[in-house]
Image (tube, rainbow, N blue to C red; front, side, top):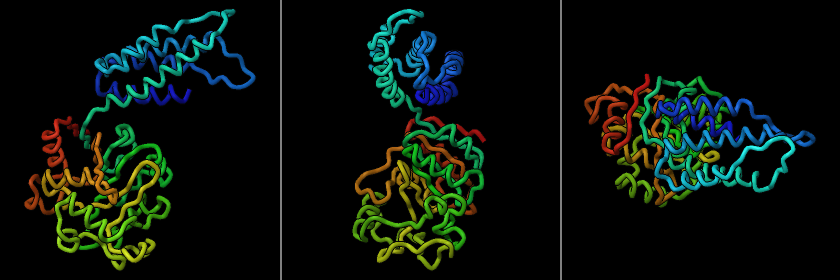
Length: 327
C-alpha cells in the first residue's frame, strides 16, 4: 500500500510536467483509493489481487509515455503481460505474487530514469510548494528566516531526500541574528552547531580546487567568526572554529552561502550549486533547482544579471534545463 501511495505521488508530479498522462494518473488514483491493507487474520481476496493487476497495467501506460526508451519499461511490459486477474475459488500461485515484486524492482529504476532538470522559482518562503517539486539531488535556495515549516518538517525532508538546502546568508556586514543560526529551521535541526569534519588543509584544498581560491581570508570574507554568531548558537568545534556552517542530516545537507556572493555570475553560481562541503574531491550533481528565497539585491550593478532568478534562468539555458517562474 505504501509503495502505491508513493508511486501515485510521483505520477502526480509527472502529470504536472506532461498533461497528456493526467487521465491515466486519475485512473491510477481511483484504483489506489480502493486498495486495502491486508493484515494477519484477514483474507486476501481476488478483488485485492485484481486491483494490483489493474494498477500495474495503468502504471505501465504512464511509464511508456514518461520513459519510452528506457529498457526497464520494456522489461516491465513483459512482467505485466504475465499478470492475470483471478476469481474466487482460484488457486493463488506464488508466481502471481512474485510478479508484483519483480515489477516494483523495475519501477524503482524507471522512477530514477525520468527526473526533469528544471529551475523552479516559487513564492518566497512557500515551503509546501517546494515539497511538490523536491526530488533526490535537488538544491533549494532558502532564506535564513522562515516560519512556514517546523523543525520536524525539515528533518523529515533531510532524512527522506538527498537534498542540499542553500541558506542565503546576508553577511556583509555580519549580522549576529543570522550568522550561524538559521533561526527557525537550521538551528532547530538537532541544535545546529556548524561543526566541520576536516583539518584546515582539507578545507583549503577542497575550496581552492572547487572555487579556484588561493586563500580563505582573501576570497571567503563571509566566514563568520564565533564572536559574530548569535548568542543562542553553540560554539563551533575547536581548533577550527572559523568556517561557515553546514550540517549533514540523514540523506541531506544544509549549508550557509553568501547571499550576493554566490550568484555574482553564472560561473560562480555553478560553483555553489555543485559544491559539496568537506567531501573532497566530490561535487554535488544537481537534478533540480528550487528557489523559495529572496531573489533581489541592493547591488545589482556588481552582478552579471540583476537578480538571482535571472541568473538562474541564464544558468539553465547554458545547461539545457527548463526554467519555470511560478510566483
